Image (cartoon, rainbow, N blue to C red; front, side, top):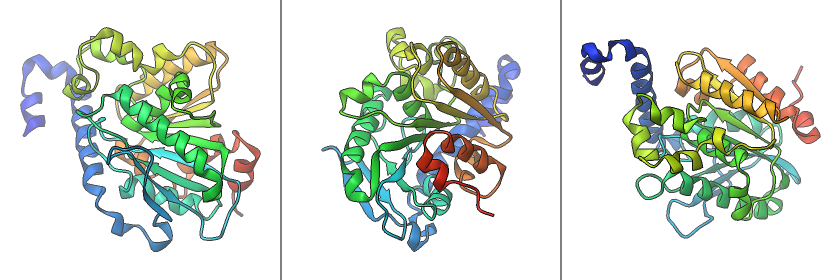
Length: 308
């Protein structure tokens, strides 16, 4: 009904493609929230060994820790931040955890999935600080969980991809919360690398709810504008089925490379939701992401060496 109403307006015909993309994105992100209750789809081996661990006083400030079946020490850590338009989503959603845990736990990696305060309680800048606080806490606890505090990789999807990209562009936000440097970042289909550009053009209402009307705030939460010097390597996965994600990722990559930072853009002919859900499934997509992970550290290279 909503799509029909929008596409029926002559004034919006020229923008039907981007609007349709954003409608599909919002529906996919709502599906993420519904799947948050679908923990039963995870196998027993994929259940967290530490669930709902608080890293702050707010009920939303919790994380789950997934560990290999066999005891590990000094394991690399994938630190995952869910999406959901900065307003919905959950760390236990099956599309956030299932295939990633199935792929990487048997290879000796730890997987940590994080919740954070959502709109309207917390704006994206406060959310980035939540993620940074969770990262600092997880690094402090890493040894007790079998991980290595110096071998964290940040990963996020959609709004979560924006948050980890913002922390990468401006790691001072992370340092202020006590977080230490991390190896690199995997951004899964963010279309919000350049927030001012979004807000100055025709855009979906979800961006108004997230970023408001203050141009100074747009700059403060925009990875492109916050990036002023080379930072940790970043892989930007983007959906070629959307009009906005890959151009945004490429603009960020171009600026990063001009500063001497290593950034790669990985285009995928997948939907916004599939870029999250499919990661960890056997195939060229997962292998391409693992190529980037292997490049970050010898321990990741060893753990993710392709099996014959």
